[in-house]
Amino acid sequence: MNPHPKMQGALPPDEASRHFTPLIQPDLFQLYSRRAARLHALAEGHDHAAYLHWAARVTEAQATVLPDAGACGPLAAGAIAHAGRCIALLDRLIERLAHDIPAPAAPHLAALRGLAAAERLAAAQALAAGRFDAVPAAIAPLLWAALSLQCATAARAAPVPADGTAEPPACPVCGTAPVASLIQTGAHHGMRYLHCPLCESAWHMVRAKCSNCGSAADLDYFSFDTAEATVRAESCGVCRGYLKVVSLERDPHAEAVADDLATLALDDAVAAEGFQRTGFNPFALPG
Ligand SMILES: [Zn+2]
Ligand SMILES: [Zn+2]
Image 1 (cartoon, rainbow, N blue to C red):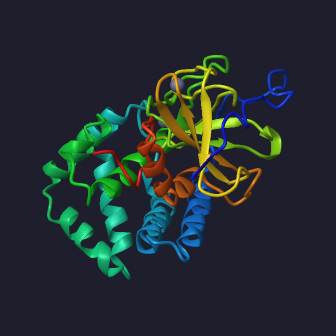
Image 2 (cartoon, helix red, strand yellow):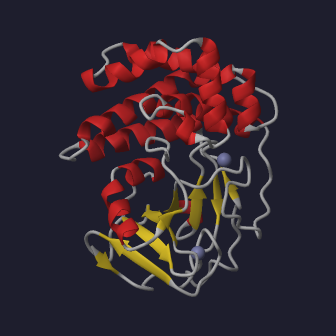
């Protein structure tokens, strides 16, 4: 691993003054399609190809089931899980994935199918409350996929206006910790947005500070290959936290969830340096 200390510390010169959108909510069908394609592409030759392909299949199923998510009440992950709407979506996802299921994933679907409705609901409520330890790792990502689909749909039905100056460490819409930062291109060229793994919103944060504690005093960047790597881990010596930064400038096909999931080996290396991850990936939930 090559540490590249402080090489990205400076803001693009015009970021502070440029007009920007504090909150981005990408179109869900396009987002899921892009994520699935990226996961399949990153799986080629990868040590964990089977899991990346499976994550892509789950994401494709989210895109297919999207019209069933429908509108729902005010956005609160716990409330949505309590209402059980995501359980109906989970059934639709399972139905979708049951066709042509890869052998390693079959036990996961069987485990979910074996759960009574009340047990599924309890598991969804545990995930919504951040009690990841309470849910078996084999079924958590699929449950999360259903919960996320419902939350993301609700978030778009009644978007919460973000205060562009606040730059919070957690999602301003649903309060979930980010999966990664994404350096944008296009209208928001060069700007950093943190991506929410639950409601799929992205919120702006300047690049010159820690996304967790806000300090700019001791940032380092780690990657496996060059200083120009698409995915780097941004660590903070003040709070000892880190989160990855994924650059669309460096690879226009990059995607926060997919590129983060394909680089979990980088997490191991940064954790070995004594840093703790400050967010999580929906396909590699904590606990
Ligand atoms: Zn969110
Ligand atoms: Zn920090």
